[in-house]
Image 1 (cartoon, rainbow, N blue to C red):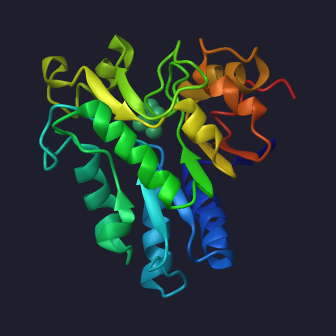
Image 2 (image 1 turned 90 degrees about the horizontal axis):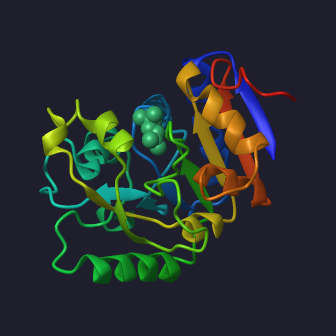
Length: 243
Ligand code: PGA
């Protein structure tokens, strides 16, 4: 594992974007897994700036979002599809057919999970998975207790995760109870992983994930077993590391 500690959120976002930019320059056909949430917003802004300054070209890249809520319309302002359209897709030259995200209203959710895994396989698997970290240790929507061998599946969201989304949905009662998420095995099969972690409220769970026991109780702890993991954290998030 490689740990990189950035001074603050701005530096974290810049370094994260530079990391991805280097990979994309080396391999224009990069297959990338993308997260949503607050943490990657600055990184998406930086990548969009690189594109606008003609330093990067996304025309051959393929992206797969990690997860999406079930039971809301795709254009719902709190959907991850909407987030991606607003914060990234509309700002770079990714081809529409190269941007993947699970459907939020599939006729058959299990079938949608299988379709998503097949799309990933047909794309040749993930070159790089960019991940965030939940306060409860989740990666994508793999909540505590998710088996390490899981593939893309329907996940029941924990109360804590739903509370974290309550503001965006304008009330807990509007937050979906289920989502489709890439599984832990799906993520671990990525050839490389970049974990992005910001803020003091993630310090404890980050130390637990990377220095504690590898256990499904802390899904991100599985990352200790990945052969090509880079952790990019700001000072606040890295503050409880022993080493
Ligand atoms: P955040 O979410 O970036 O909004 O903190 C991370 C996550 O829950 O995976």
